Image (cartoon, rainbow, N blue to C red; front, side):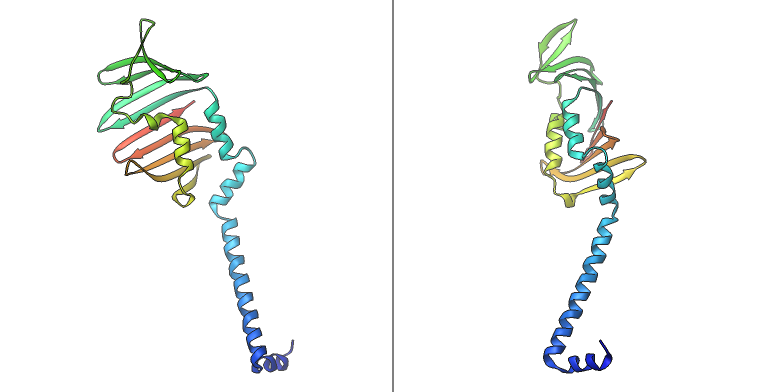
Length: 203
């Protein structure tokens, strides 16, 4: 299109409006293209793409919730240190709780908690005294983070591990949950609520 034709269209009211519309369309197309390119090369998309080459994050969780594992839970509440260490085998949880008043051997099966002393089992209800037991329940944690809006989440690539960070509220207090994934395994879950810290390690 030569300059004379452009001038003719520009002076004509209908042609002027049409050319303005075309210019706006070109500008919007350019803007959308820039945003799309930025999103495509964003760290979050790159990390998610890496996941799809092996196992999706959802599949990693589902596999984790079904398998047997050993664990160490280190909990700091009001400057008191509490430690749970054990193993989950076929939905039965065997372990030891350690804190300043001593060590307790326990098992959790069929939704009941037992203290084991000299191989004798007695049902107890205070194993998780002063501890938020929900924050040790992996199914609860999974459901909780699944409901947090995506704008309140972040994904960080940390030296070969992916850190999924969730920011939400629990019992009217702010809570931060970090799920650490190495390859296709959840290795740690870090929970911070006020001054309380829960460090859950799996192996």
